[in-house]
Amino acid sequence: MSDQPAYERPVYVRDDIETVTVRRAPKYGVFLAAGAFLGILVALILTVAIDGSDVSPYTQVVYSQMQVFGFTALICVVAGVAVAAIVALVFERVLGRRTRQVTVDHEQFEV
Image 1 (cartoon, one colour):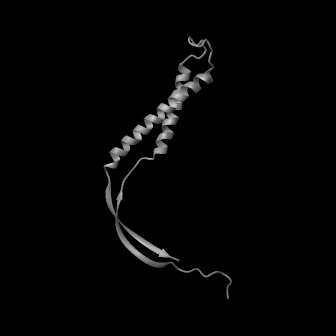
Image 2: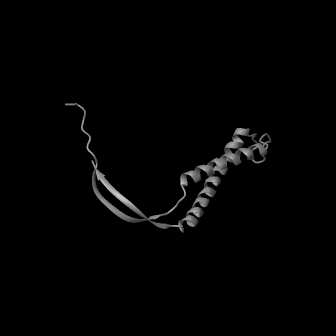
Image 3: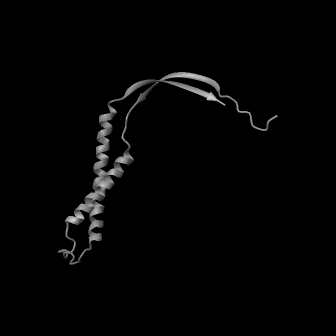
């Protein structure tokens, strides 16, 4: 006799034919991450375009390039995420209309 465990074959329990609704929806996390990335990219471009070596007329303080990037990124990331969320909602509304019914075969087995 062998000491190996005997593996049982799965036992067929039931088979159902069901109709399900398939709906496509955007992945919001991907849209929000892309919006944040684009916001950082725009902040970087604006930082290079804005000369941060001048004295601020309001506070009489000189801001470094990193400070200008940080302030600009705060605004641009929030704006980018907001725009991306709106785009994802619009995509969901447009794609949400295209639902379809599909017939699936649901099989259940037990070991």
